[in-house]
Length: 234
Image 1 (cartoon, rainbow, N blue to C red):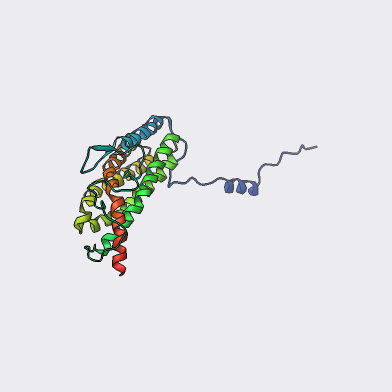
Image 2 (cartoon, one colour):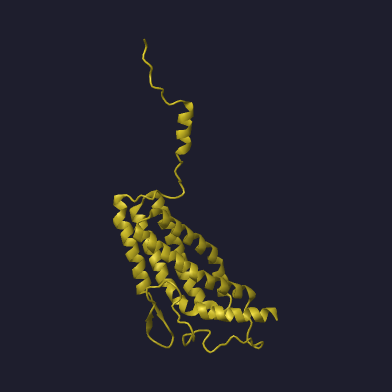
């Protein structure tokens, strides 16, 4: 009597196993952090926090004011800082005041709205670095890079009008640093390049520090831009 052999996996079983295996997502790195990158990622949090806490904003009428640990607008709510473009202005439309170019008005409003997104990108990078989550770090860096690329043309529209030219100077310095640093960090994570991760995070930190002073004026400029919008439709 011949013994029965245990049935091996048939074609259907093999096919099901293949379906269950998900192809790796090559657009973002594996969430698991290699040991050689753990110390590097931990240093990114410190680098970004130093940039956020160490940045100072100087008002024309007084000493340097610490921007604080937040990455959002440093200007207090209420009255505008002395010497800022909106000091002493009101919401009332005055038809006799100079009219801004329409493209400048739209650019200021767009940059004011983007300030909150830049704050969120910085917070996301910090949180991802603290959690040592490479996938989230990659996503935050990629989002920041694309946002800066989209905003770069708005700087040209600030440069064509005297009132917004000082802000344009700050943006012209900070945005390329933020964009280049975000791209370098993103690509370094993809390639597992530890030195590139450090360099990219340092470039982002420098960009955030150089971006800090514009927060003193962008809120006031947005208020004026809203008034200018009312004038344009009259």
